[in-house]
Length: 316
Image 1: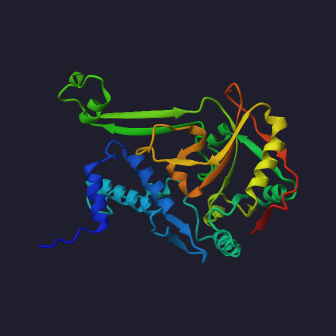
Image 2 (image 1 turned 135 degrees about the horizontal axis):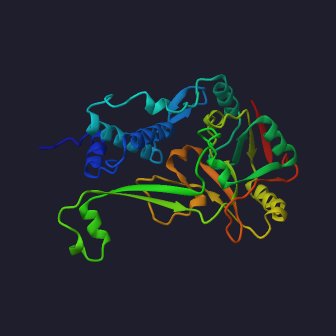
Image 3 (image 1 turned 180 degrees about the vertical axis):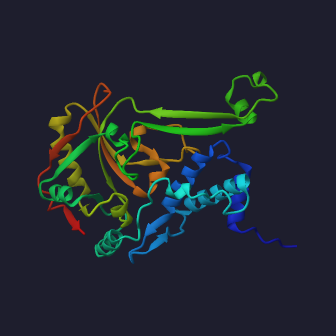
């Protein structure tokens, strides 16, 4: 007798049942995770409509995480929509993808031929993007700046630390200790919270590899600079910053997005790692690390010279 395989979403629910990694979260923490996963599933289409990510192999991880949070909610409260209270999506304002700004962004960006990975993009207010484009004026912010509660949801983040959280059963504890016989036969499940910390403050300049129009909305931007020649931009940024950063070590690269419940590795370098809730930003960053590490830095304004030969300016 041939048995048909269970539907994919049922397979994912059973997979989660076998490793219920969200079981230790408070309801508030689970609500936040639901919101984070949902926001990464959303996109603003070139037709200025609210849509979902294309379900390919790269994006399937988000549908898997969404199915897992649905299963955790069902285990706690019963079938959907039980447990889904208004606070989950309205504790903070959601990006308004139905706004006039969203419509302008979708139409304008779709007129530019930019493939993923072809360029770096910087989103911001028109006055700042015009300054960047015309004279190469930009600001290196200290990592500590982004922890300010005055920033919007897409910008506000702790760039100096990254928390992880786990639930450990007795079997998990046995695997971690030198002498398993020391572990009592009956011990309560253990919640373990770990926080990775940057050794000090550092300067950073953030751009993105994403060409999604939603970023205009997420960042409240009405302009964007498209950096076509990444190598030339990097060279000018390094040379122009050298006088002000002194002997600080400069590094660049894409941000790695870490699921705080399912990290792929314990090798976490905080300045280039971000909470998975910001994955949709596809950030690429330039960082400068003072030596020795320092507790608090101020911003630095630098000028690269006109970028008109290597960039394009979009104004909505």
